[in-house]
Length: 111
Image (cartoon, rainbow, N blue to C red; front, side, top):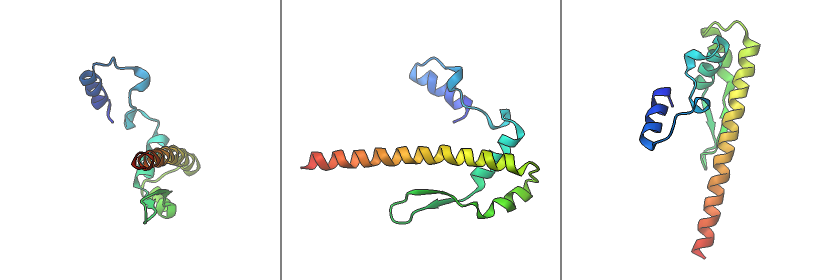
């Protein structure tokens, strides 16, 4: 969500915009953080075939992408990519728990 979309959403919902909820723009981040976000988004997702579970990112092409983007501080950028991976992993874990809970509740209702 962009900052503009956030402001539009707040306006439509009648909410007061809050600075702590304002999405960060990629350009406002430090250069190494920008590179980490770009590289993380370029990495392909690994998805489990039967149920579509997100397994993480495929890092096999990370070095190639780092070469293309001429990343100098590879260790710092890689550490930031891992932070992003952890955030996404937690997000998908929570989604999975919610889907399981909904599925259990539907099964109980049907009985």
